[in-house]
Image 1 (cartoon, rainbow, N blue to C red):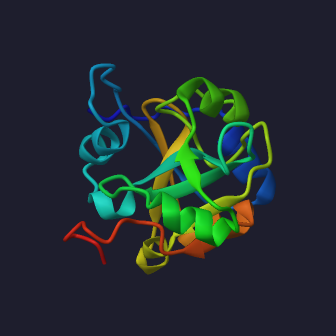
Image 2: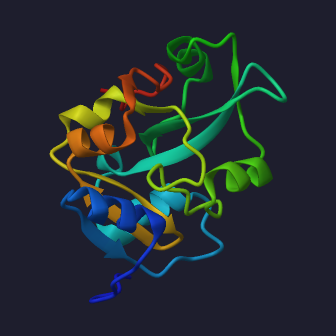
Length: 172
């Protein structure tokens, strides 16, 4: 269910506002029992999963290695080997939730690639570029922001690459 006229101020919206980037705000009632925060957002906002992207924190080259960010459609799986390759690392693994929250400054399920407390290298799946608009977490559960994919790439200084597993038949 959508929340109308609910302006939300987060680090992500502050960064976009300060950058002069046009974006839209989309708040919805979050269900804490939801199996997938990203798919919940797509359904609640009435959007196709192809245009709603999730933010995943990974650790490169094992425990103690640097962290990075992968941004992929919510219905897709991040290909960790592909991300490691494009990041110039030997391997990548999903960060533990406490580490992801610590390095991003956001709570799991509300991690936005914009406005993290640490400047992490960010990699966005190439499918974002075929969308007119993409939707990402706005920095808290139950709140997404929509913007042009090129603006997202630019504000993050992100690298665009093929990051999803090839086994999904819905893959573009």
